Image 1 (tube, chains in turn yellow, cyan):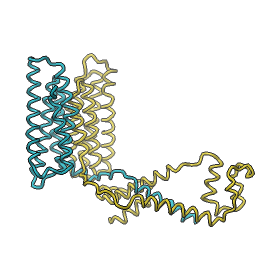
Image 2 (image 1 turned 120 degrees about the vertical axis):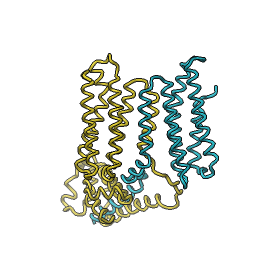
Image 3 (image 1 turned 90 degrees about the vertical axis):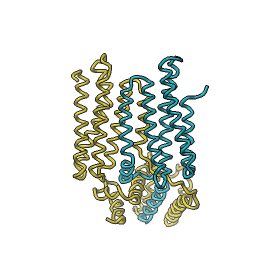
Length: 269
Length: 173
């Protein structure tokens, strides 16, 4: 599908979720991805336009934008809340032809648009080419430092929990386009971190802990595993067939680990 | 007239939205490429996490952290051995090494140093870790400084940070 068609579809559905076909294209096309982002920003900018909070202000706002197409009686009476003789805006009583008001408004808008464009063009410093960096690797290095300084089982558990969440995020970002080998690699790492990391560490919590203390210590791990389980199950339904097994395995690993954590909390493991 | 007004309003918003200097989102295909480039390294670092989690003392943790640094250093060396040197990768890995030194190895060694008595077995182990880490990094430094292809500002800035962090392994009082 060519970019022009995709961009037209994006504009047509700017306030809704893009179709699967469009999403797949966005994953591989920087230009369309940029257009999608700009549209999303416009949507949120429109939502952010403040609504006047008083009747008088509403009346003024509506008068500014809609007065031309309203019948004269509504134009003057419908939103007026203050006697015109007490108005604090004497200039508003000056008779200005309607066409002039529009012309003035349009001129102001054009001036703003031109000014914004002008400020953002012209000679700019040439940015140094920045090669993309791998977020997972960066997070892993940071968690290695945390693991080096970790002194308690809880601190180690927190590191393993974050690593689990990072791998889950990685799977979430690439599952639509990754071949089975890459998804299998992510699933393998996820399994290792969950089984050898979280579960092993959970079993090493102090023996003196009560079930309530164990539950508190394992709450975050359980929460992240639940998110991974739910997400992976959902993603498996919309994933290409070849990546479904890896996602189902991730969901299964997370589910089994949660069951194990419950046993550890009850003191049965 | 109202339509014209709306169009101009939307155009202005589009210009404004486009002018916002937000970072370009990373595409799934780019993320996948990065994952492939780093898969072995990521797996190795997970193994280092496991060894760190099973360490019984602060000095063991420091030793395992030093091993993780060696793994990153090997990956960095590999980036310099490519036929066309990958300066961005050298800079990225240098920054990761500096980060691990600054927030992992150096504070751990400093804490251990404060607890260990001179002449104890711990002191000998501490000295051994400090010497190994410093020697490895000095070797890396000589290699990078002698490579004329690694003189771009990006690489220089990143490696400078690494050499600075290296001073914290065994600070001179």
